[in-house]
Amino acid sequence: MIQFRNVTKYYPPRTYAVKDINLTINAGEFVSIVGQSGTGKTTLVKLMIAEERATKGRVVIGGWDITNIRHHDIPLLRRQIGVVFQDFKLLQRKTVAENVAFALQVAGAPRPRVKEMVPQVLTIVGLEGELERFPHQLSGGEQQRVSIARALVHRPKILVADEPTGNLDTINTREIIELLQKINKLGTTVVLVTHNREVVNSLRKRVITLENGTVVSDQPVGRYVI
Image 1: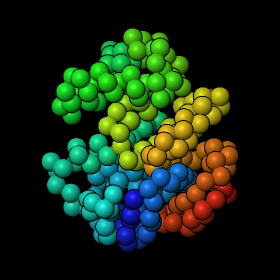
Image 2: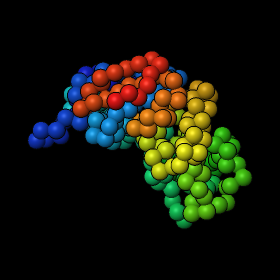
Image 3: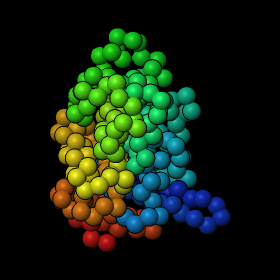
């Protein structure tokens, strides 16, 4: 479960990125957060992963109040929340398998766990035959699949996808969204942050719309209409 309780993020001298946000996202949901650029979508992501701290209010992830999370607890939080970005953020000199393994290695995972998890998550994203290829040898859609696999290696309860299809063509966009739906059906909560109207309207899932840093609409089976 994700909860924002009266959350405000203020940047001096006079900018409110989000203001008085109240949201609850239940375990197992697939939720789209939509709005134009500058409406606060990315700020919500940063608050979820403790990259930013709320100026006011409380942020609760899975029953854990992270509003004032201690610095040394942040890695533990981020193992519970997988994050996928628009620009993939892959290590260009590492293979597909090495990119995914790296996320486990930096967390101190033992070698047997790395050997077990890497092929598992690459199978989930449909790249089981591409372990030894490098990012420059992959299409944009394949690179995003590697990014998603890397986000899954800690078996997170939540997957946050921040504009995951922003650099992809229509076919790859559809495939990535289908993959996110598959991951959701396996039990992971998915939070899709996007301004892609066609993607949101095709999902027929919950849609939360932000405007000027506030929630202006929360539809259980919604559309992106702004």
